[in-house]
Length: 320
Image 1 (tube, one colour):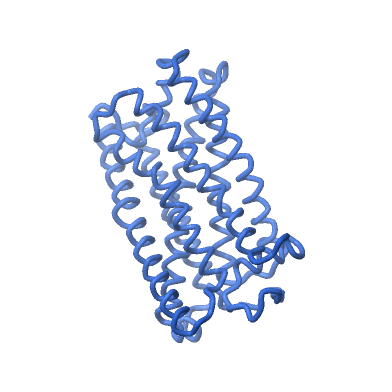
Image 2 (tube, helix red, strand yellow):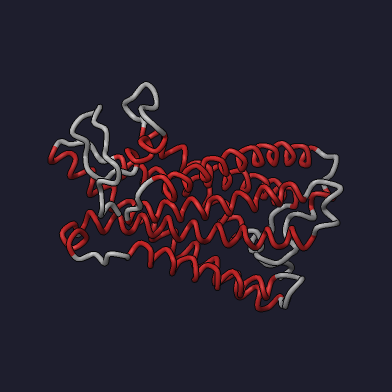
C-alpha cells in the first residue's frame, strides 16, 4: 500500500519527474484547457446562482439546482486554484493552500454527485408516484435533503482529511480505510442509484410520451442530460481515484490519466449551465427574452402547449 486515494502523495509530484518531456507538454496543454473550462464554468454557475437565488422565486426543484450550481462552483474554483498553484515558482510556497483546495475539491465533488443523485431520484419518484408526490410530499423536503447532503458530505470529507492530510493527523492505515469507504459510496451507492433512477425515468417518460403522443418536458431533458454528462465526463475522476492505487499502472499513464480526469470533471461541472440555457432556448433560433426566462423554461415541469408559449414566473410550485 504505497499510496492512498486521499493522501497528500498523489500525482502532483510527477510534474517535476516528467518535466521537459512529451508527457509534461501534453499535461500542460490539458491543464490549460481545464483552466479555461473552469473559468467559463464558474461564470456560468455564478449566473445560475444569481438568477435562482436573487431574481426568481424559489420552488422545490429550483432549490436543488441552486445547490448543485453551488457545489459545481466550489469544485471549479478549487480546481482552478490547484492548477494555478502547481505552476512554478508558487508550488513550493503554498503547500498548505494547495492542500486546502484539494480537500475542498473532494468536498465539492461528493456534494455535487450527491445532489445530482437526489435530483434524479426525486424526479423518478415524481413520475412513478405522481399523486403522492403532488399531494403528500413534505413542503420543505428539497431544502431538508440538500442540507442533509451538505452536512453528510462535509463530515465525511473532514474525517477523511483528518487522516489523509500530512498537515493534520496523517495515518496511512486509517486513510486507506476512509478511501475504501468513500470509493464504495461513490461507485457502489450514489452512481448506481443515480443511473438506475435515470433509466427508470427515461423508460417511464418515453412510454408515456408514445402512449399520449406528447413531448417530454424540458425538465426531463435537463435531468437526463445532466446525468449523462456526469457519467461520461465526471465519473472518470471518481474511477481514477478508485483505481489509481489498486492497479499497477505505468507512471506516465497514471500522470496523463490524472490530467485528463481533471479536464473531463471540469467539463462536467461547467456543462450544467450550458444545458439549462440550450434546453430553455430549444425550438428557437435565438434566446427569447431574458436569461431568467430561458432558465425558467428549461426548469419547467408542465408540458408546453405550444412552442412559442412563454412561462410565467415560478408557475410550478411543486416542480421537484
